[in-house]
Image 1 (cartoon, rainbow, N blue to C red):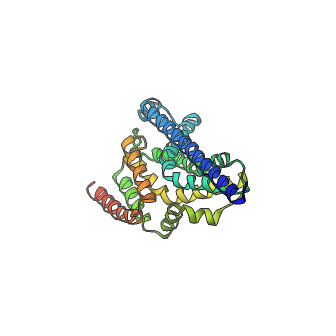
Image 2 (cartoon, rainbow, N blue to C red; image 1 turned 135 degrees about the vertical axis):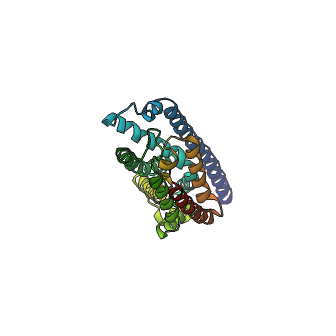
Image 3 (cartoon, rainbow, N blue to C red; image 1 turned 45 degrees about the vertical axis):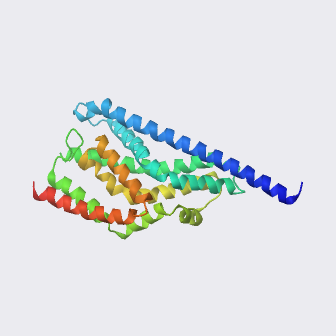
Length: 261
């Protein structure tokens, strides 16, 4: 067989593997996201009813359940917007001579990404406990104080205009640049890369997630609206402009909430 023919065979095999990897990764992500949303909806309709009715005191078990709720909810909300980065990682991992198990590497990368949001979820669960202790949240997990609610809106709006937001969003919107600058070989490197990208995403969206305390931690429509906006901000060509415009609207809305109280 000629060298040229061998090159064509190799490229054909690579293309076949890339298509297979893409299908596996997309199917895996879709499955995880669907399960996360099923759990979130189930929590809202089952255990969440008891929690929101004030029937469950803040015990260690209850804190653990609230933390789990936040963690699973973050997975359902954030993995879809991270899909382009994950697929690009799978592509580069397959082409890298150092990686013989790209699909496993993708799983480790996703685990690192999720780990960042698990850390956020632990903080969110603690803040929920604090807010409830100061009667800032109702038993329905919604803002019970107009000054608190308005303050959340203003803080989220102001953050949309900060340099930190711009830097984190820039890394979320530029998967290729992130892969190029942050690439590390091996499974440990995959986890570190996933964690680093997850931290950028947390830095981009943590204040927006705080708006769940305004509209309702278990308000499914509110959750879906925030998740949809996050995807728009990260993936749409006009995402940066949409983020800044939303910041203006959030500040105005916060001032109205406080002023009309």
